[in-house]
Length: 289
Image 1 (spheres, one colour):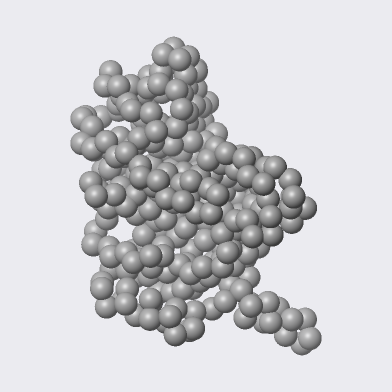
Image 2 (cartoon, rainbow, N blue to C red; image 1 turned 90 degrees about the vertical axis):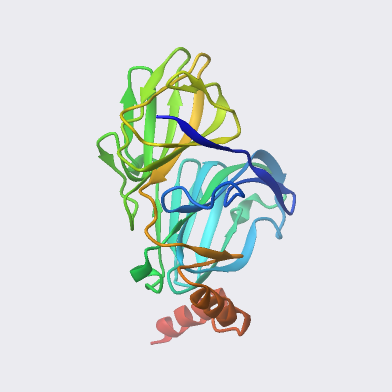
């Protein structure tokens, strides 16, 4: 086992929030099915009616929000709705096309609130790129926790350490939130071709090779490498098998071909994507019927 790349994020400003973007990067487009990875916070924001992410489109991916701290409300054009609290996970399968928004919960307007989350996009396999959009919300305590002598791992997506997350997976993959106590270690028993460790805080070494904090270290899985920490750490582990076909990305659209990518972008530009407004009127019509 050896670390093949160390990916340092670049900063993207989204209103008052600064995002650290790890994927895609000039060094690497994907790790397993993961084609996009952002970290927001930890920070505090003064909540206004304009806070959060207003309505925007996605296609060709399953987009994931893992809320480390704070609260958010999700709403999408497929009828998905959820109020997320710290530790919750939301997975939205964009498929053929969806729009959504994520906003601070309404009763928080005018207050100073914590915000800390991970956003990831998983590319969908070729045969599911045009699948029906869907949404699922998983409360923190519904996700499996694996406890070790000196640490723990919450399995958020896929399978790891003998546990399988309830989150829908479309390829062999893993996403986990791990913590190691000072002087502890955690064996990375993960049978995937590509693995990345995003060290969020603390110190860690992988098979005695030091990891850079606030960076993502990518390695190809061979054997069972051991993650150690002298002072304690928290990290996100993600990966999966190498994706079987190339992916093209333009803004929020991802596709297996440039033709399909342009088709999706053109649909959105021409107003042919579903919208939150159309979903609202559909609900009203259903109530009338």
